[in-house]
Image (spheres, helix red, strand yellow):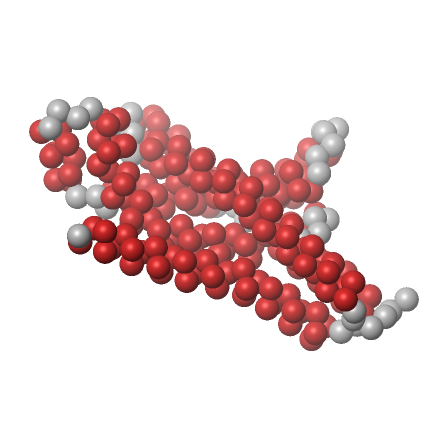
Length: 218
């Protein structure tokens, strides 16, 4: 039976927002770890390693994320594996994030001037030490803005998980709207919650960029 929007509906939306944050955190952690591996592979000396990393990136960029989610979730269940919507979404967002961040961070590594490599070699640093002490710290400064931009995109993109039954913020909004018939109120609150999550990330990114810039000039 339809009912007026109440406190219990608001709490249901807030729980959906918490699941959105949880999925985003899991996917960002998994995507960040995979992205670092992909970025280093894209910058490797071995041509086969670079080619494999490039193939991984192209395969993910060339197919819609929604299709990847469907394949993992329905494919696993068809094969007899009892996989939850949360696990399926976490796997897909992590793999997709690894491809996106890997390509982005590889570009940031490539943006470090060649003179830095030459200076490290003149100091007798091995390739691994050059990455750890010279290249990656400088690449990290360049990567701040696109990485936070990806995180904001990831938070909003988690709404795709609703299509396999995961009750995150958007799906919670659909459920509440079906019970209250108050779409402007419900989706207005959802929009405000997404804004409350994403806007501070953008502000934090700007502050971090300025801080890193000041540290670099000091």
